[in-house]
Image (cartoon, helix red, strand yellow):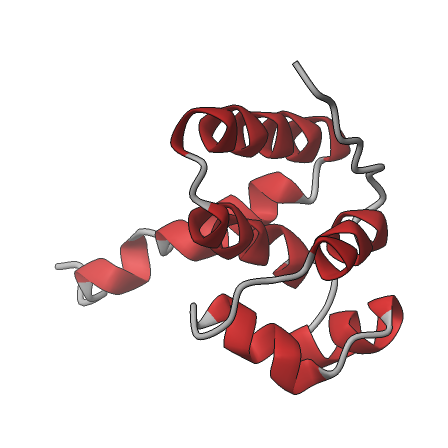
Length: 106
């Protein structure tokens, strides 16, 4: 008889997603899909919140804040939806993840 609990048998979704996001091709597709969704919803909070798993594949929030030159409290407020990021912080976040954020008027 198998004595493992169900939650020990299946990985949690967050863990599975973070493992997948370690693949740079998958990560790029993930970011592109987030930006596509943002272009339709214009919901900056969801965009930022959905970037968090990608950040956490390589950094702690404190470590990422230090890397991009933003105070950790600022990032925690952004991720808890208590603060909207400025364009400067948004650019630093994408840059810290290895992407160039380009604005386009259409």
